Length: 479
Image 1 (tube, one colour):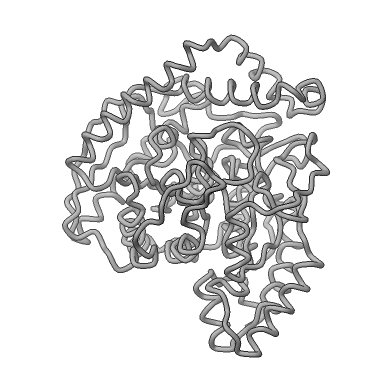
Image 2: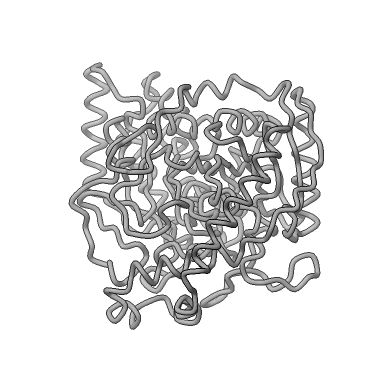
């Protein structure tokens, strides 16, 4: 089985361990082999803790042989985005400013993964400080999309999504302040969950994005996302935004189904432009849930465009967080940032206050929508993965023949960071060019269970979870 274990997800590995068909040391050895072959072309993993990982895998194998009590993720390899603190493992935030930073403590979620028996293999690439939706930085360079190595993987959790899609690990952790889990999940053809805000505690962390950022899993199946969430979710007083436990097992979502649910689908939130092929694929996928007993209707939302607000939030938070080290950072920062970060100096206190007012207006409209519907479905991104280019582009210049700004293609994701609702991206098809398309599933506040139930139903219809990206063949990258 040694040659095949890289194909297994979290649940598949747990079952294989239980049967004695493989062990953590064999799995880690196989994945390390694959990483050495593929990662140089994908550039998804930026720090690999190889020696320590092999030692830990040996200990996990011995624990299984002794038959003692094991954690729910015993022996499961996991990758961590490189802006999440990992004790003893370099954490760079994709920045030359932190290229030698090694934390003295783990993030809460890393503590929980380790306590559950998971093996932290290393760290994944991101844009510097996670500020843009394309994964590139001056320290490590860009991450390629495994479906087409000339295209972007998305961001900011692009390294995590590309690694999971490339079968370099069964699961990875990302975070999402404006779509940073869902965007790369959509472009790379994997499952990405942004849980309810506060569901997974964030501590320790750099300042900024305080009321916007969510931690969450990236996997190749909904079941694996549920397995991780049952370990990761729950309060911790070190995070002042922490919330109480969900009151349900995430794994129970697999049994829920969508029968009787009322579901809204839209291809425009009121301001979004979408490629017509993406719109057709996602609409067809959404209405397939009728086969599972749901009522699906097309809805018109008429939301206001908060692109200026998300940009103001990024710029003001970044400038405030980095003002003490700006002189040291500016000479080594990602060159593209020098063209737009100084614009933050033009943001006024009134602009910042208006963001909060706009958030309230947004919530009022969405609250009313969710009085009538259990879920909202829409495209995750307005386009599929587009070609990479040096220092950009951040996004396509046109969508559906219309000239757009650089962030128009992610207009479907960031509203739900402003509201904090749970949302996920689930693969629902391929374009004519063979690139993945993600369908976004948005739930009521605190209701990840319905989101995951719908995703599981869609997964059973669109069986892309075992697909090998066309940029990869038999573990070897095709040039």
